[in-house]
Amino acid sequence: MDKLDHVRTKLKEQVPLITHMGIDVISWDGSTVVVEAPLEPNLNTHGTAFGGSLYCVGAMTGWSALHLTLMDAGHLPSVWLAKGEVAYLKPVRGVLRAQTTITPEQRQQILEGYEGKGRVKTTIEVVIHEGDAEAVRMSALYAAMKQDP
Image 1 (cartoon, helix red, strand yellow):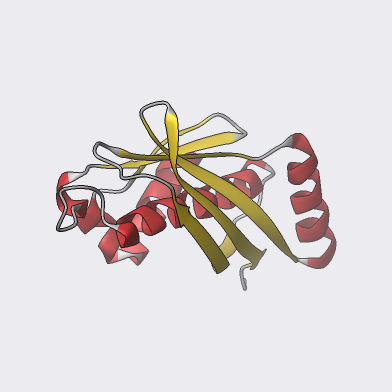
Image 2 (cartoon, one colour):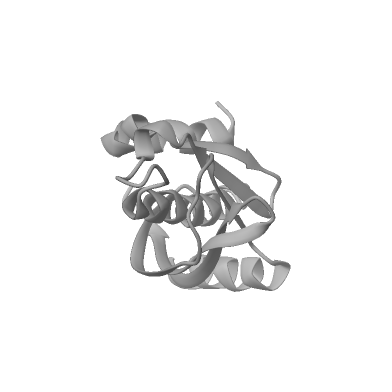
């Protein structure tokens, strides 16, 4: 099983809501992760994406980015969301598609903390677009630590 499949499986098995919402980790190129969910199971009363669903897609995007960054360095971490703030800028009327990029500097900070102390905290910025415009911006603090043997 490759790293992307590992993250997909972990999310679906350990967070049942993910399956109901249709959330899937679409891609990881070593720095940028993309997570999507279909609109249909995530609708609100206005026929647009439900705010809680947008938050969840954003949260899983940052979680996936940190998890995959550490996996690429040979680690199998325990990752969780510590704090998240979201700004809903405009309605989302199509696929909920979130993206984030881990910069080389951020990767270095993550690996130095994790490898040096066995744990790390980092803030990850996630964006969801509606067409070419930003619709949702999320800033979230994630923590990771080594799993018990």
